[in-house]
Image (cartoon, rainbow, N blue to C red):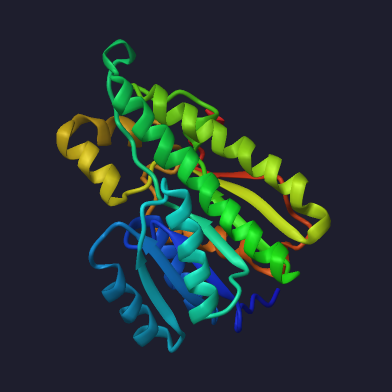
Length: 255
């Protein structure tokens, strides 16, 4: 298999760190030009580092993915600066753990807005850009194993629900856009040592050992463990694959 993304333009939401950044670097290593969207103030600096490391074009753009108009404008900016994006990774996401009876309306809406609505707005702008240009492309939406199982011992009903919805969103968009040559798949990671996960562990240190004890491979994933799968789905090597969710969890959901 020859994965070659030279000349492709990839948009990565949540690209300033974690899975998003690891995937952006992996895509750049295959020759793709990169647009990073993130709320982090360092996103432009991160994009410049990718450009330097891999010799590709890269831009960073601060974006709140829950703002539909701003998201559409961000994609228009990418088209103007780099060209029509043909790869999308939606990695922007948050998690708020806690007993469901104590979850506030604001907490619930925030998780749903970022994880589900923000994913939809990004995919919507991506799909619209491709359809208007008459181009084909591949979108990869980050869901989670938590969309099909219930994690323990922490409780995160809002997160679990949002990620289950993302998986079905990927199927829905994939079928809707299939005739136009736009593929949409979801990747469902297990426990990954991202900044978000580290923050949860810092609040509850006992969680890490409990999680690892339930993973057959005996370790949590790194963001780089997820990147290879996303690159495969973004490339033409997976051209007949759409409307699928691929779980990558070290065997967690098998037991």
